[in-house]
Each structure stands twice: as structure tokens, then as C-alpha cells.
Amino acid sequence: MTKRYDAIIIGGGHNGLVCAFYLARAGLKVRVLERRHVVGGAAVTEEFHPGFRNSTASYTVSLLRPKVIADMKLHDRGYRIIERTISNFFPFEDTYLTLGGGTQRTQEQFARFSRHDAEAYPRYDAALEKVAQVLRDLALQIPPNAGGGLLELVAAARQGWPLAKLDLAAQRDLLDVFTKSARDFLNGWFEDDHVKTAFGFDAVVGNFAGVSTPGSAYVLLHHVFGEVNGKFGAWGHSVGGMGAITQAMAAACVDAGVEISLEAPVAKVLIEGGRAAGVRLESGEEIAAGIVAANVGPAMLYRGMVDGHELPEDFRRRMKGFKTGSGTFRMNVALSELPDFTVLPGREKAEHHTAGIIIAPGMDYMDRAFDDAKVHGWSKKPIIEMKLPTTVDDTLAPPGMHIASLFCQQFSPQLPDGRSWDAVRDEVADHIIDTVNEHAPNFKASVIARQIHSPLDLERKFGLIGGDIFHGQMGLDQLWAARPVLGHGDYRAPVPGLYMCGSGTHPGGGVTGAPGHNAAHAILADRSLIGRLRRRA
Image 1 (cartoon, one colour):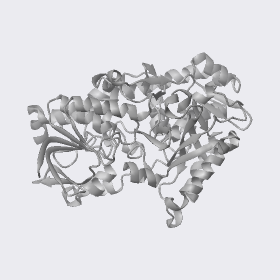
Image 2 (image 1 turned 180 degrees about the horizontal axis):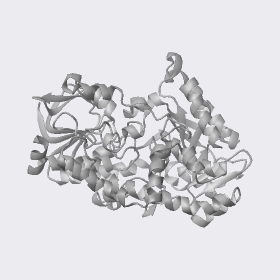
Image 3 (image 1 turned 90 degrees about the horizontal axis):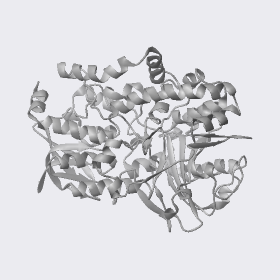
Image 4 (image 1 turned 90 degrees about the vertical axis):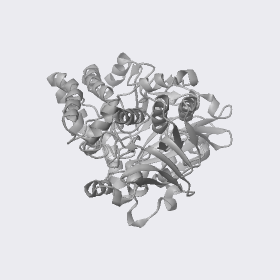
């Protein structure tokens, strides 16, 4: 081994950068090893056609924790988020619905379909916000470990206290969110399918499931616990794309003394005497460090980078069964003009063009999309969220031109009959464009170029096993202290010196920075005297 560091971070995605920053700020000598030619992981901005740039994978902002933004001084480094005036626009067959723009405006929209639902909305919003606040409070805390002794029991009691303080109605809502399907949960609040669809969509984002799948209500909640510019539940666009965020993070790391290496893919975690000792790159180079923090997902780490004989048998078995696959197909499209929607005509920029445009006309539509994908590999009528970032950031395309981010759901990670995504990716991309065209008949003719990321492309390019944008499914069995597995929910691997700092740990997926923040604090705690005594106990 030619070089030695205090800590090595495997993967330069946003959580890896956050972890590296906090460790370097505490005085550690840190090196980040990124396999691609650009830092940022799935949160990058790249040119996909001459003159057209876009956020290649992750494409919108809400969940990034304010503490991380402040500590890394991201605002001083160019971090700027433009809020959506309205959050979402839903084109249906013969009508439309917009969501957001304030309580009164949302109620007015709902009243077009149901007076009951318009009146119920403020109560629903308040109830969900109360539960979402619990998630915000837990996001930057290290989960307690089962079987970890008295200190872990104290931590569990401390983290559970806010739950105990909730009133009975809020506790019931919390139980509903963690156990019910989105359909059952929303049926308890609303009567109209248009209104339920407006909320139900969030339950299938990054979730290979239907709105009737038990547990899908939690994913609905996961997407509303964020904030933009101090506004809870809001979403926005990062000026310059998502890569502007990770470039700002990388600058913060470099200023703190972090060394960042690109095109440096890690092949193995080196273990000596039962402890992490460094890594071996695919080039054969070995780099020594007493701390190795993996920003790759648990499936990639434990199935490929750590030799199985170094792991406890039960842990190894459970990691083989760790569930991945978010059902995501991602496209970036260069456009000659804005889409002209049948239910809300116009090719000039309008408010609905700046929103998240959701093609998912109905709760049954979303369930059928999932059922199709299970049987055929992809939906006959897919769920599509389209963002048009050039409507708020015209630096991303040539004058008068536009880009569209198409975030598509219900595409099976593995196709039936042994087919490969490589063989059908263009056919499926055509199908997605045709689906948008059914709602905006000028869309197909306006396409200049497209960039396709099937689930297999997402795995190859970004290391997302099964194309899973969350590094692992977010069912109740893979959350909080059980993420990735019970007994190792505290970012510590079963190998001393090896840590997990990516979205496969608490609080899960999205551009939050929380796993990186929490993992760094676990590492620093272990380096303290109390931490060393704790780990020996």
C-alpha cells in the first residue's frame, strides 16, 4: 500500500461528500474515491446532446437537510433553489388538477371535484405535517441497535419519546402511514379519485409497488418531509441542475482538506485481522486507511466488495435477501418547444409547465401499471413525472429550446423470460414518449434527442443495483434501525472500521445528506474514548 489515510470514502455521491466533509472538518485525512469521471453520484449535471444539459438522474430538490446546507456553507458556494409556484399538474382524460400554491388555492382546485375533499384538505395536511415532523426530527439521529446494551436502550427511548408525546389521533395516523397502503390511507380522508391521485402518486415514486400495496403509504410520507427555503413540503429546482449542489459540496470538501479522486473504482475492501484496512482499486492499487465508509448501496458493498467469509453467516444470508429495485426508467429529452396539453392548451410558457407534470390519471391506473410490470416487465400505461427545468433555468438549453426530465415508474428491474433491458430499451423509450404524446400531441414531433436510462443502465452507470434510486426498497422491514438490517442500522458494518454512509441506511433515499452526516458522527464517536469503550462492551 503506497498511501495511507485516516478515512477512505467509497463513492463521491452527495452522501459520500457530506461524510467526507464532516470527517475532514474534525481533522481526519480523508480521500474520496469516485468511479466515474465526475463527482456527484446520481446528483450530477451533464450535457446529453450538444447544447443541452440536465440533471442526469436525480432531478429535483426538497429533502436536503438544512443543517447540512448550513454546515457546508452551500449558499456561499452558489447553492440556489427556485421554488415551484404550484407543485404538480395532473392532466386527466378530459380535465386537469393542480396541486400547491397555498391552501386556499388547493382547496379551490379540489372543490371542482368534491366539496367534502376541499374541506378535508387542511385537516389532512395538518395531520401529515405532524407525522412528517417526526421524520425530520429522526433524520439526523443515529438509530439505536437491537441487542446493543443499555446505551442503545437509552437511545431508543430518547428517539421514541417524540412519538409517545403525539396525541392519540397523530399516533393513529403514524400507525396508518407505516402499515397501510396509500389507497387505504387516502380513502380514510378523501372521496374523489382525482384528489386521491394527487397524493397517491408520491406513494409509487421510487417504489416498485402499487397504491394498493401494503406499506406504500410510508413512501407517500417520505416525499413530503422535506423543505425548500424554509417552506415545509415544498420542492424546487437547483439552478445549474443537481450537479451544482454536488459541485458545491465537493468545493466544501476540498476546502476542508479532502482529496477527491475521479475514475478510481474500488474493487475490494481490504480486511486485516478482522478489521477494515483500506481498499483495492480495480487498477490493483491498494490504499490504506483504518476507516472505510461506503457510499455505495448495501447490495453492492456486501455482495461484491467484501469477501463473504469476513461477514457473520446470518448477516451474509440477510444481505443476499436485501431487497432492491425501485421500478424506475429515467430519460432526458431535448425539445424544440414546450408540450401543448390537450386539457390545458398552449405552447408558450405557463405556470403548469413549471410544475411537476404527472401522467398518472387515476388510482386504478397506477395499480394497473404495477400489475403490468410484474407480468410483462413494463407498464402498458406507465406512470410518468415530467419536469421542464428550462422553464425556470434557461441556461440548460440553447435559446428557445427546452429539456424534459422524464421520471417513469413501474419498470421491473429484471425482465421476464430472460430478456435484457439492452434489447428493449429503445422500444420502451418510444412507448414512454407515445404516452406523453397522448396528453400533449406535439410532444413526439418536438423531440430532438433523448438520453435513456433503463434500470440496467442506472445500475451500470451509477452503481444502483436493480436500478434502485434509494439503494434499497423502503418497506417497514428496511427502515430506521432495520436499514439495511436489524443490528446494523447505526451505520456500522459487522467488520470493525467499515461503515455505511449511503441511502441504504437511515433515513433512506433522496438527496438528503442525512446518511453521510450521521455516518460521520458515528465514526467520530467511535474514535473518542467513550466510543472505543462502547465498541468493546
